[in-house]
Image (tube, rainbow, N blue to C red; front, side):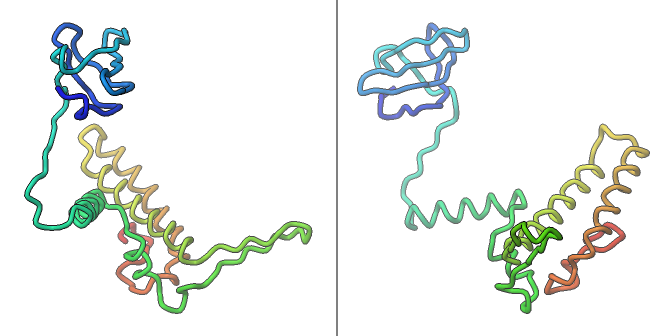
Length: 183
């Protein structure tokens, strides 16, 4: 294995010492923390060191690498349900865009706190999405009994109900919270 193919954190396999994790790399050797607990400096080419994790080589791209990476990241974010900032902003009712939420403490010696509504709204949407994910996981769990699912669903429904206060911020009624736990 060529030294240029090794990076810190990479899992490798040595023919004599077994699997390990690369901790440092210099011009001629790699320091590997082997799973037996011993840290050794090895020459990758001379020792027969091999990758212990799947490797990928991307060649023949017909689009710029940056565009390929952006598309890949976007696909992963969509797949795991992460909100993109623009997507959240699109859900915010137009009259609130660029607005601020101002909190005034009772004690006049304390400072007022201002939060951009876009930031606050993003947190509300993330809470909604996390509640949706929790609800899906509860309902699809094979480890929970039906009674446990029912109890947990009750908590989730009450959370949705508490969040209806913020429905005024949403552009579309379909995106809002409702007290039945369906948002």
